[in-house]
Image (cartoon, rainbow, N blue to C red):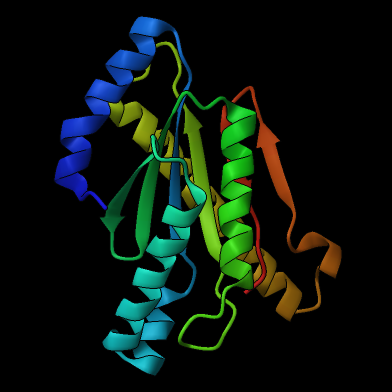
Length: 178
């Protein structure tokens, strides 16, 4: 895994390459939901094991040409060169499904929030990452609102697990139960 310094060194080159050859490039921001509760309940050693297993799940799902970065805390960023929107959506769904099915050291089902951005004509490194982050934050708000509504009986099971994809805004989010 690369860190943020690696991202700062590598992503501008990836963006230049994608623009030069007119090829797609996508980024995926992933965050383990409610990770603070894992550390609080099970301790930081178990939390570290969860992060290692999460990183290994990501590694096992992405292609060799994709780069994985530790964005911070329990957040990871994947840079997917040569990956159009539909393919990055499928990749993200495979990661999310793998996490839901995996038995982490907590013996609880973990879920992940995700934000995707696809390289646009005028994008800089900053604008691409900001768009993925904004989608991710919108998803977190919606997910937590869905959880609150479900707890209050304000939404049905059909509202949980929904996803939306909008090629116009080049953004993707998945809403998952906790």
